[in-house]
Image (tube, one colour):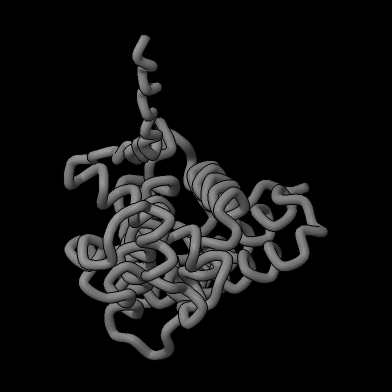
Length: 227
């Protein structure tokens, strides 16, 4: 009886599992890369951030990354602009702000500002200090923040009508905005003082300056109540 040959079993290599790529639309992909860039720039210096590393993390090619942000500088400036807009939105978006008295309006606005910069500590410091030297676009981002804050104080509230008639008012408020920035950075570096104390100091400084700008008869309306 003939002996049947056993069938030869050929082992085929297991098919490699294809990596599932998550496809995002343009807006979603850009938002994803921008968020990654912002996180990278707030924890690393500008020179330490690598587009190669970010592209790998996003699981896309470097070429596709550059489709959204042609240079690392473009990514950096876009991140700063978004951080700046969030800051302005937080300050001017306080509900019913126009219904408050001038001092209450300032107190609520400054408190919202401090709460936001505290929550975005690294991002705020990166915004205000910049990371690529004297760059005109970075300077413009910062200037837009300051102008937006200035305009918020110069409109809406009854005191605004008085401020607009006093040439020194813009200088006074711009000077105060510089103090707010410096005080915020110093406060964030230590965090050893309650937010309310910093808020009250900044509001008092604002109104002390405005008292020198307003007509004495108008200034009496906005003095802080006696303790």
